[in-house]
Amino acid sequence: MLRRAIDSVPAKRRGIAPEAGRWSVDGVVEHLAIVEQRIVGTLRGKVDEARANGVAPETDDSSVLDEATLRRVLNRTVKISASEAAQPKGVMDAESAWAALQRSRERLRDLLRDVDGLAGREILAPHPVLGPIDLYAWIGFVGAHEARHADQIREIGALVGVEA
Image (cartoon, rainbow, N blue to C red; front, side, top):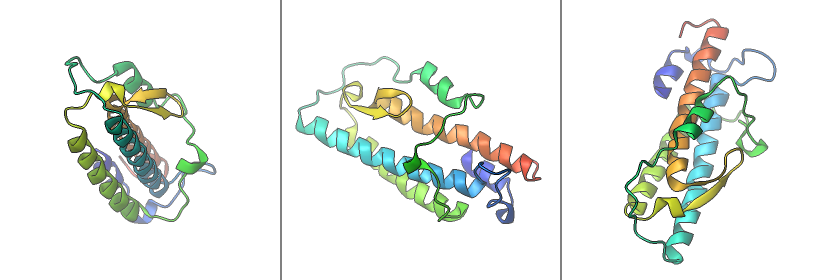
């Protein structure tokens, strides 16, 4: 979904912001790379800490997705401002940011393989908007966050003269 959204905007138009104060496609993908790298680093630290503290094995077999949280993240009618640290710096074009995002995604997959069998609801990390959320909610957030920004990229494409 994200790659298709990026590809729907010609490379020569990806650096164009639709208006002052808005991100370009390049900026959106750079933001995703920054955020996911930070998430993986935070979760890795929390998992290592939980493991050192003897986190229990998983016994809960209920749904791990919090649909209300996912709907909140996906709702593009509500503006969510990224922290200064998560703002794109303009140092990556969409392709280099995509490569960074792919590297981060591989680290996330490694983390998920590593935590298989641990009680993910007991592994908490703070989110700047959602508050403390568990490992499962973080994984759902990563997907919803990407989907939110894929929609944003399609919107930007339409605004810079590209049919999405």
